[in-house]
Length: 188
Image (cartoon, rainbow, N blue to C red; front, side, top):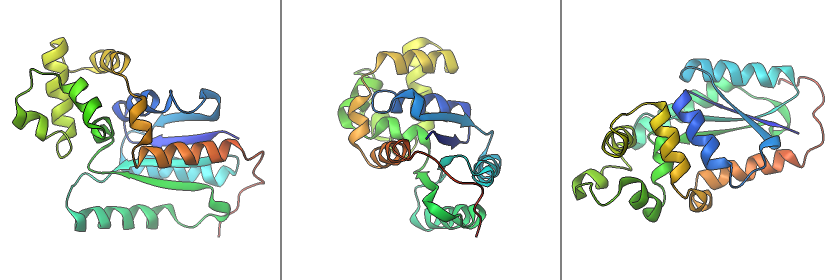
């Protein structure tokens, strides 16, 4: 059974594809960039209502503050609503999916390189989008999608698969692959 991974944007889609590729066979999942938080929720619900998919919803908390993370998690859970059969999981990236690139110190060092001032590298976990833009500008002279793809192709990403929450996403996708079928829409 295929798992549909739904995320907010194209950058998230590219990062997730690169992070999942070493750990999950491509035939077990697809990744769709929905175009924002609300469209991601809408697409995930639509896929669940069709009844033929498992869904992994990977969205940003857009904060590192615990009360805001809890609020975003609660809102996401409420908007998704109940579906039978454990057919979906929500993965909240704190603060953004880009932060998953910086889960492992060795991978972070490979991404950031020696040219980054320590203060810049220290901000990677809390300001991953800004850190990634800085890296792309300094490595490739531009911060666009082709530069991001080049970076993702050059960096050894498999160690990140052992880190939470990426390890949980991998486990969910692999568990859905072992399921042979889903029967019809099942909304509670």
